[in-house]
Length: 279
Ligand code: HEM
Ligand SMILES: N[C@@H](CC(=O)c1ccccc1NC=O)C(=O)O
Image (cartoon, rainbow, N blue to C red):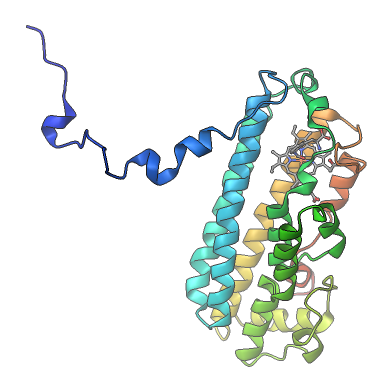
């Protein structure tokens, strides 16, 4: 006996989308799938493009969450921020796993299309820079590669005018009654963060008596968790880069692996790491 093929329409599945919002309409799938324009036609260029585009999408979500997390902390709704910060850490976990796909591209594969990339580089990812600025790693020099796109410069400048995630965390501690130094609370928001003994002393007080400062303690651990994942992203990146291009100069003009190794030394929330030695 032959079985008639299953017809989802009989179960009520909608089959007619004339004038109705469909999956593709809502998600703009046509536009999304029209964005993979291979320059060289090399087989692995598709992997390279999709790897970067998916990373940019996840970064977009990370920025959305960072925005809301900062707003919540500023309004003393720290618990709400914890959920967003946990999500951001998971996003970075996702980005970290994605390196496994890119690692299947060998140096021989990459050389088939590297020249086509010209001087373009991840160094010019404005969303990556926005994430760094938003969490607190602020370096004005990183705006320059965007000078040809004034709207991106404006976005980055607007970010520098806002308190970073770390600034908001410290303001939160001050409102909780902890003695955060005034010069830190009034600092020039655009300036690079330099480790501060007074800030470390405040975090130390939190870690010495978590029960007295439970929300601040939880916030500190969420920040450390995020930085932990971020560091792993940087490490995966530099390791993949060495595996694929060795010590060649980067297309963006930096020394390549040497530059990225230097970036491994960046500490987003230095006092939170340093206090572990003195506790
Ligand atoms: C085979 C794959 C890759 C290679 C060979 C590579 C290589 C490099 C190099 C050499 C640099 C230093 C800047 C330069 O001079 O170009 C760099 C920076 C960067 N790359 Fe990649 N990259 C790869 C994949 C990725 C992926 C998948 C992303 C994800 C978006 C990414 C994002 C970045 C970012 C954000 C920077 C700036 C880092 C910073 O300034 O701290 N890269 N990359
Ligand atoms: N900087 C890389 C090129 C590269 O990876 C790249 C090029 C264009 C767009 C994104 C890229 N990804 C990360 O830097 C290189 O030197 O080969």
